[in-house]
Image (cartoon, rainbow, N blue to C red; front, side, top):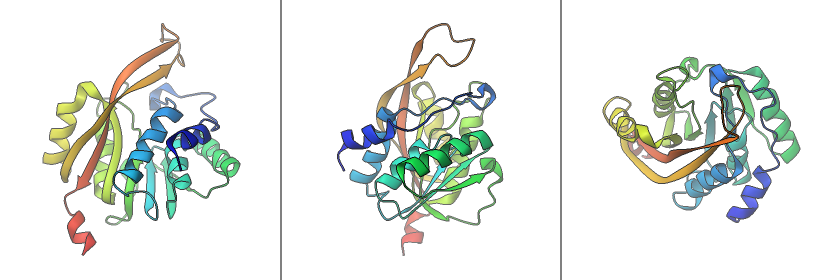
Length: 213
C-alpha cells in the first residue's frame, strides 16, 4: 500500500468529540500516523504479520494503520471508555478487527513480552509530569521487537537517557522530527492551531535477540 493511500484511509477516522484535558487527549492526525506506521513496516518490517499493541490508543488511529498494513493481531489499550467506544466504531467502519482493553498502561499485568511491536502517541506529560515516561517504561516491558513512539523534541536527551539506562532499551533512535499540529480543542488554547516539534522514536528492547532464538 502506498503512503498516500494509507493517509487517505486514516483521514476517514472519527476523532474525539469531547476530549479530556486531564488525559491530554489530542488526535493523532493521518499525516503523522501514516508516516509512523509506514516507516515501521517498510523500513523495518515491524508491522505485517506481527502482533501489535497501541498503548493509549485513543480513537484507534495507530492501531487502524497497523491493521491496514497487515498486522496479524492488533490490541488497543486505553483508560478512557469513551475513547474505546470511538475506536470500536472506527474499526467497524474500516472493517478491521482490533481487540480493545480498558486499562491504565501501568496496570496491564501482561506477563513478559507478549507482543511484537508497540506503537503509541503517549501524553506529553504537560498536564501530569512523567506520564510520557510511564508509557515508555511499560512499552519496553511488553514489546519483543520494537516500540515506536512520539515525544516532544525538547525532551530528546531525557528520553534517550531514560530508555537506555532505566527502561531496558538496547537502542533508542530518532527516525525523524515531525510537526505535530495541535488543534484548538481546549479553552486555554489561544490560537486555532499550534505546531509542536515531535520526534518519532524507534526503541529496541535489550532482550530482543533472546526472544528471536
